[in-house]
Length: 410
Image 1: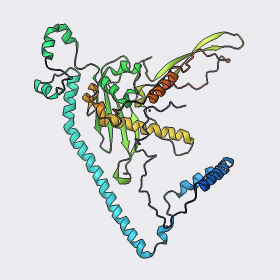
Image 2 (image 1 turned 180 degrees about the vertical axis):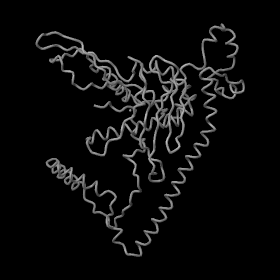
Image 3 (image 1 turned 30 degrees about the vertical axis):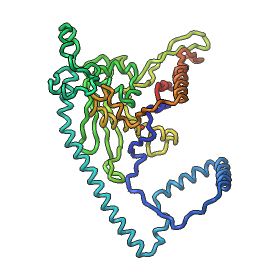
């Protein structure tokens, strides 16, 4: 069973192959208005229909299949129009086709403009990385220009304070420690993916950058210093778009691919070892059986979900779960590309939080706080007893349990 989805954003639907039409949706019109029944009649009709569907599940499947086959078909109204009117409709369709071509050109030019300015941003990102990692220092002019107007950074007098410190202490701090980890923890969607175990590895994160692909798409690059967890110096994740544009000329997200992480033995943060006691029913002897089971980790980000197959093998709930995970995975990539990388310093200081769309200055409702507290209490009271006993000594075929979500994942 898959883990509950965290950080879910129901109001932010990512464009995926499952929820974005590859072709323009046909527009149908109905000449006559439907009759309006009374509320009582509607309730009776719904109750009758519900009773019929409850007794005939196959009928429900047949109707769903029939409705699916009707999507995109004409209602017959257009065909019933006089030839002169149909001719005008055809002319309007031609204009719409021209409009669609212009929209496609517009989106392609926007992408080229993004690439043009990204090339101008890159030197700034390189200077930022140099300062963060202690390879360079900002000039006095840069410090003055970036000093907070409200005095929160309080860089004035910093030089005097430094002179009072010993040389040993001043030399011990290189660059800006835990810059990227702090920035990520201030970005809500990313913070909820980072576990306490992940932080030890993410402290070695020295840079996050991105690059555009030759075709529509982008790659996120996480660069790490040498560490005890994995041998990779960079871990990348690439987002690909479909070749065909969607309705309105937008690029349609297709899928993502992540690098394989070369974990050192016993250091894989995406799994945990679960120990259980097993008792032999005959001899009454017990033994400890250890199993490796998946667990929550930010590094699962590099193993993106796969789109459901076209064979229809998955049930509706499973397909819906996968699609939600695809939407969230795409949104996380967009957040890193559009928010974290361009404004990393604002996330590090926390100033970017004031500009989040869902940032609310109002006081929270007391009932909401109480509900939130209850949820926390429920989460903390979950039973994680690893001392369960099994009647069969060799019964190790059970599927590993997924670790319960710590927080709420679009």
